[in-house]
Length: 112
Length: 114
Image (cartoon, rainbow over the protein chains, first blue to last red):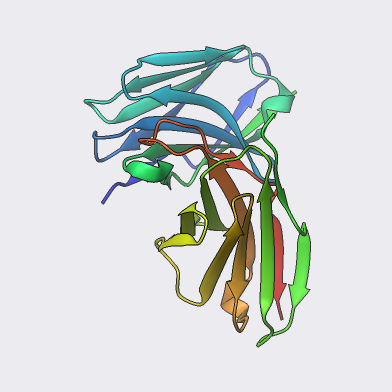
């Protein structure tokens, strides 16, 4: 059974710092990996999707990488801002019909 | 832009009531999903549907049922609400394929059962 782990559960950094959020998964036979952002009390917003054949994806200050063989992904946030404060979740798809297995998320706080 | 809407942002129901949570998507997606999210447990899949009138159980289907009579609408039903069903409920949709597509989420319904 696929398991997704995100450590640490919470992170606090000063504004302007470049940071890396980690995600690991136990079954490397994935179709894709998706990073989401969730603000308190809200739904999930998709940030980046990496297909299993890809190594990385970029969107603005965000860069996500995927190493399937080692079961790891990282989300890199450049020049962090207080508006980046949120919970970041990663999820992997290992079957048909796009079913996802989620990590528990990393709650990021960026201090002004 | 894909839009997934949920009928209520906040809902308060009493134990034993029948509760309907509605989800509508406007992008003609074949797949639709219901999750619940609880502190310390993360998101867990309750049910999903890959076509009209088709459904499959997720990881935690007990106490829930679903209905999909039209492609754009997926309903989650709590036949007899209980306090342990107090949670945040999230609906999502995606195109059909070999897991290669993004899931798009609605804003969530915070359900409190008293």
